[in-house]
Length: 77
Image (cartoon, rainbow, N blue to C red; front, side):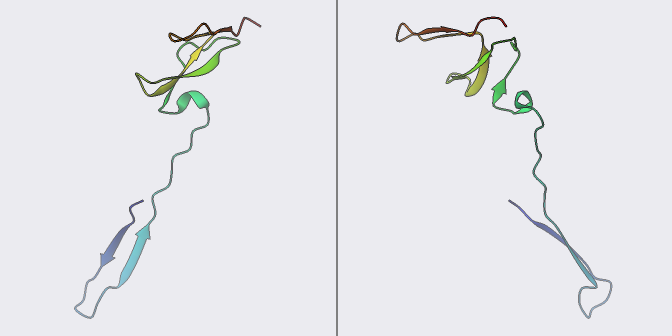
């Protein structure tokens, strides 16, 4: 985290005022607003699944793997 400081000096005797600003962290109020979540397909029963090709979590109603036979359907509520 970077901290910036501003020193104002109007005389040769030294700074008259020193102010330090600490940047604030932005907070998300929803899961979908996070930058590593793609929630464009947000339906009842949707689950989060990590997609390594996009490095994001995506919402899906069906989870399928390409390496096995696992299939999970979140259904409609």
